[in-house]
Length: 289
Length: 233
Ligand SMILES: Nc1ncnc2c1ncn2[C@@H]1O[C@H](COP(=O)(O)OP(=O)(O)OP(=O)(O)O)[C@@H](O)[C@H]1O
Ligand SMILES: [Mg+2]
Image (cartoon, rainbow over all chains, first blue to last red; front, top):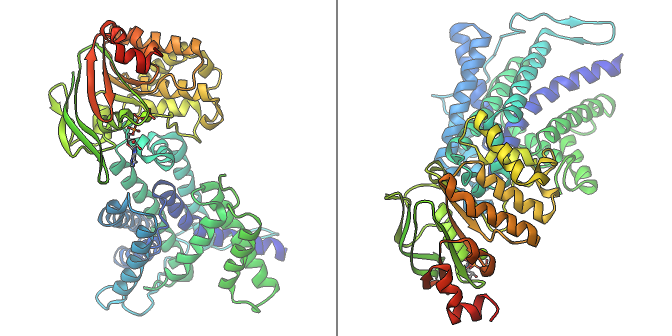
């Protein structure tokens, strides 16, 4: 019973990891850049979400607008920075990415933006109801997270596997030059990739904000390195790998916290998992080659 | 259809093409012959838009190509079979072909795919196979098939005969020979001068980044220099 309840809690945690890591994985696939500033997009998503929610009081509208703004923010990051570094050695965009992340976090803390305090995001379960069974239960908030994640993942899956756009991302991830020589407009294709990936990060920000009923400027710090661990664990650029890694990490975190108690801070567990993993499977769970 | 004027191309500081000029006419098959390192692939890469010339001009149907990125050139009717194929390695044969016709509608794609499968039945049997697991020859067929998928006006081919068995070389060259009947022009660079000269309308000889000879196949095969260098005496 406790086991199952722990598993269902882990599943919720995994959902937020998945949304965050999916976008990062998509970007990594196409650009081969570790896009640290992705975590800023997550924070911006939460911020926009909480603002819209406080104006209009409608969670779904807040989520939609937050995703839209996050998507646009992601595209702007690409067009203003990575776009100019496409042919530079890969450390260059990486450093640019770290720089942007630090800058955005500082900027967001300014009083005219988010300030240095926490905002409540009292959207509750957005009208959904809790699920209770004999074995496990989900609160309304957890149902909300599950539902949104599931819908978004199905959407991403369809785009990746059933559309030309998805095919163009796969082609670009294997050989960008050749992709352009079959007629793919790389600028548009990569921008669309950033848009979708960033919208997912924005959704993750909103969901976590609602779940913890709290949104603040530095909320992206933790996800910034956790998402990394997940894509390294998952095998750099493999979406199924990222999903699997999210689940594993969430389960391990939940169970270790539940059983070992607080011997280790929860967030150090993620790194332990990473180190162990790299010792035994240096290419990640589902990495290629 | 294609005119290249005084093309200079560099890698960093090293100039590899020193003022190359050539033409490909409407429905014409033209070869550029040359030894290893002559600059053949450099020429093809410049024409598709992967390399920027430092000087000179390329025009397709009187429109300058140089400002256009590769994908815009494809839109205007160019297609490439690059050196060593450059397949999308982790994708299936079908997906590689589908990508070849990226700018086309789905109905066209199905039709074009049939054409390619007729040409290379070996590919038809392996629709779902991942490109990197194909044999070298099959990969080359797929690279050619992918380029044909876009129904190009001008096909750029870098060493089509590489890695193919003689019978397939013959078949591929036969296909190329017939392309002009479908309104397709071809620029192919080749080391296999013997087979190439049988099917082309005209050929150029490229040496160290200079065009040193131009002529009809007959004139070139009769030329003692060509005989010595490319036709084995
Ligand atoms: N990326 C590069 N950087 C520097 N030099 C290059 C580069 N690519 C090619 N070269 C040089 O340019 C010259 C022409 O190369 P290119 O690939 O065009 O030759 P090629 O005629 O296609 O030869 P092959 O028949 O062997 O394919 C060679 O001397 C080569 O070393
Ligand atoms: Mg070459």
